[in-house]
View 1 (cartoon, rainbow, N blue to C red):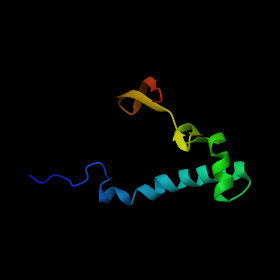
View 2 (view 1 turned 45 degrees about the vertical axis):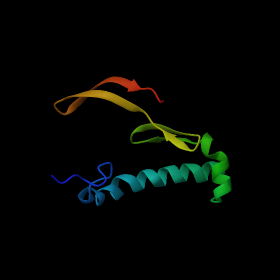
View 3 (view 1 turned 30 degrees about the horizontal axis):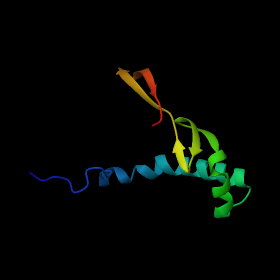
View 4 (view 1 turned 45 degrees about the horizontal axis):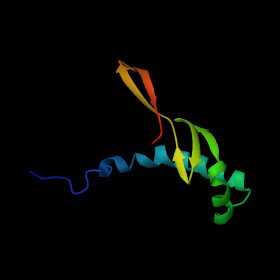
Amino acid sequence: MHRPVAPHLVPVERLREAPARVYPRQRKLLAALVGAARSTSVPDVCAVADTVSYEGARGFLHLNDHHLDQPVYLSVADGLEFNVLAQMAPP
């Protein structure tokens, strides 16, 4: 039986869907970074990166040690509704 070479990668057929979901979030993050730095200079943006937070479609997002922290929830589907059981704590 054929096994995928890289099972952790997004299937090719889903890649064409990704820009519509990812680009608006990237623009919002970059706008928050450039707004906080008041500059497009990479050193200026890096200097303020850990102070940046913004509200996104997936909730409140915050940069911490140059990584994006966002809420992750454990939920159960009930038809078209989701019942949130818990918010997962960051590692």
